[in-house]
Length: 325
Image 1 (cartoon, rainbow, N blue to C red):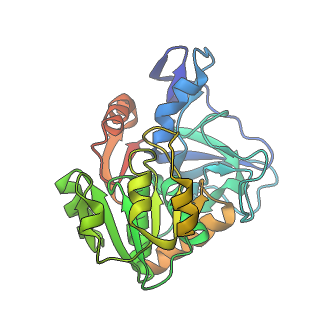
Image 2: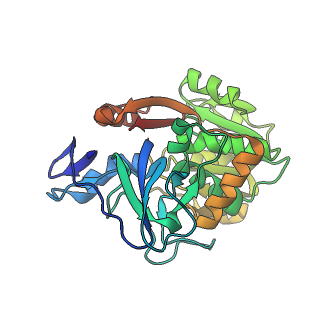
């Protein structure tokens, strides 16, 4: 079968052996896979490993084959992949052994994908294949950050630095669905306009004076995935006693804060990563109830995955990037 793999010092579109189903597993003939920043980083993490690894954490397709003992699914079922392995019940943090699809085992950038029936869910009926294929990782990340960790309430105001990421586009829609006020930032005026189009109440220039522009706003919650470039600026506009959730660091990992200012302000800082199977199922129910759909920026053929990587690396996207298989 065709797949996009990392091997040695290259990422290539090539032929690879088809998976063989085992007890409790299903083989999914993938329709669309979703691209995430994680996929850009895995080749660096693997180094010069000559063993080919299929990249990709997100995907949706049709069950082609079921192994012995599979009870909840059958051939022909339309499903999405749960990218979070080993985390079933909701908990304060992922359990020991938690892994994400695509490392260390094969991922979804291939014609077929094999996985335990425990880590698939029925595709929401209101989503097409492009939307379903890019959904799970980013939507689950946003759902946990906003509801489990951020505990957003109707009438509260949330600030999201960086409006164009896939996770940000989900958080905007989720927060508006429960009656929150949403403020975002972006350097790109077109991204600011698009954020307003999908529900943001206010979109400000990242390079502007946040404290001046937002002096009449009460920011109850910040959800940040940028890291060093925005952390302290966002903290400075958060209300005293407010909550800040961080789930990523697209700029530098390490930063410094004024700890005295932090504890006098009695801020709450919360880390978040992905989410559990329980939260994924809750998120799927939520998007069906509110008719929420992923914002799909661009779809590439699987054979052009390298071009999709370049597009994501350049940060041009608003929403999600998919691979048509």
